[in-house]
Length: 115
Image (cartoon, rainbow, N blue to C red):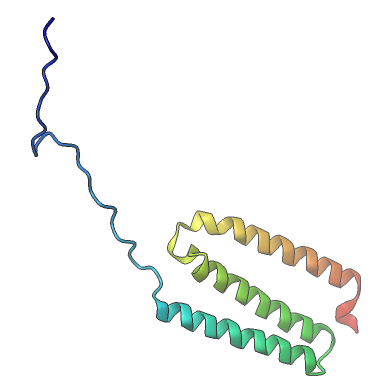
């Protein structure tokens, strides 16, 4: 029996093994620190609002807007959705819209905005 012919792999026949390209456009440490500072300030504003004596619809609206802003910032930067395909973010967008809608229905039904 004849032995199978073994071909040497030359540069022109060798499979290409390339290192993956570096992730371009990702956040730097400075961006993370800036986002963390903004989230900290927003949290401080939320705490201040809750103790400020503002009541009713204005307080709830301000707290919901601050919470949605923080939600979007965490998704965009810490979960890297800002740098991914928009289709991934749609799932989170549907979740926040659904949760906010449900929360608003409960608040309106409870007549919180009329107090």
